[in-house]
Amino acid sequence: MKKILIVSGGLSKEREISLQTGNQVSSELKKKYTTKICEPHDLLKICKSFKPKVIFNALHGQFGEDGYIQTLMDTLRIPYTHSDFNASAIAMNKEIAKKIFLRNNIITPKYLIYNFKNKLIDITSIKKTLGFPVVVKPKNEGSSVNVFICNEKNFLKKTLSLKNYEEIIIEKFIGGREIQVAIMGKKKLGTIELKPKRMFYDYKAKYEINSKTKHIIPVNLEPSKLEEVENIALKAHKLLGCSGITRSDFKFYNNKFYLLEINTQPGMTKLSLVPEIAKYKKIEFLKLLEWMIKNAKYKI
Image 1 (cartoon, rainbow, N blue to C red):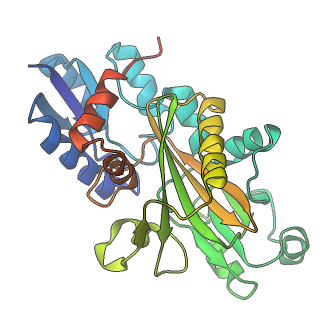
Image 2 (tube, rainbow, N blue to C red; image 1 turned 180 degrees about the horizontal axis):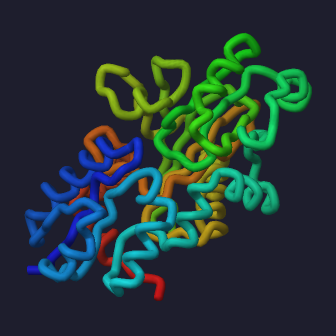
């Protein structure tokens, strides 16, 4: 029976979600495979004793989907799931990803980069350049961790709460509908719409059952618009050099799709969107995971 090592947990602010993903993946895979779950700091030791055929990367956030752990996995020469170190690092760095999107005619919200060490906060300049409200968020986080929608009155307070990050993104707030697209390798897997009860699809809206976020599938879009957003997601996936599964987050406003970011390691919990999209497309969870294992590879 093939051995699959699932790496989850880690040190990021998304540790709890990663543990949920790891447990969910393990409970499915062990129906057909021999599985073991480990923390990233135990990866080298466990690989030597367990000798897995594939590593399932169930980490989220910093050090898990930003290229660091992928570099280590490459040195082990054991195939691993999701994108390689280069695509992971680019997708996690929202500034670099946005520059690539814009250079390739993909619409993304207008933004500024703010460095706490080098700049004073100039609210007047931000108001002139972006207008309020704005979205304030870390440059290198996932799952809407520490993301705030700010008006002119609370902007300074919310921004200063992120001073532990060296750099943040200040982005023009785009209203409209929350649309998410899953890509599976080189094909479009499907699309889902979210209607959060909260102000936007933040961390609590994503992971807390009592947040009551409404998941809508199929999405009520004209076929041409549905094809358009899925084509944009596939184009972005290819531009960043992603592989395996990705999920792209969009806002649909004034008949335009604004790409917010690409998630190179979307969650695989009971509330996660990719398994839900796959199920709608008649792909059961175990089959989805098996496809990811077969697609696993290392860079060097």
